[in-house]
Image (cartoon, rainbow over all chains, first blue to last red; front, side, top):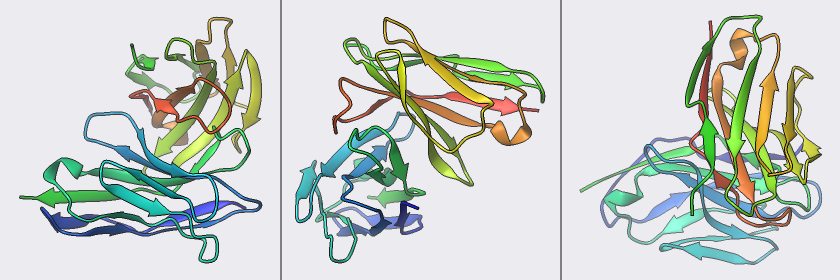
Length: 113
Length: 113
C-alpha cells in the first residue's frame, strides 16, 4: 500500500547549520506531497507542498522538490534558527481530494544557539 | 478568524465505555477530517466528511464512527473502548476537497484505563 518513510530523529543542529530531512514514498498513481510542522504546544500546520513531479515547494526558507524518479521529497533549509525547532512530518495524499493524508512517523528537529 | 476547536482537550475513559469527541471547523470550511496520533503508529487517517457525507474512510474498525452536521461541525464516536484506543485525536478542516491545506486543531487526548 501507499506509505511514507522519513528519517528518524532526533536531529540536533546548531543555529545557521544546513538542514536536510529525508523523505521517500511509495504510492500508486501520482500523489501530492506535503511537509507539515508541529511546533511545541501547537497544532500541525502545512509548511509546503508539491502536486506534480519536479515541482518545488517553498516556505519560510524551507524547500522540497518532488522527485518522481527517486520517489523522494527531501526537506532542506540553508540556515536553521532556534525557532525552527519542531517535529516535521512528510505526507502524501491517497486520493484526488487531498484530505486523506498518509503521514511519515515524524522527525524531531532541535536547534541550539 | 478562530481556528479549529476540539473539545474536550483531555478525556479519561474505562475499557468498554464509549466516547464522543467534538470538532468545530474554521468558519466557511466544509471539509472535516479526523486523525489518530500514537507514538507507535504515528498519524493515521480515520475519516473525512464533506457536506454531511463521509467521503473517505481509513482502515479502522467499525467501532470508530463519525458524523457531520449542517453547520460543518463534526463528531467522532468510539464505542467499546480498548486500551489501544489511547491516543491524541486530531481534527482538521479545509474549505474544499481539493489540495487545499488542512488546518489542524490541537487535538483531544484520550486515555483509556
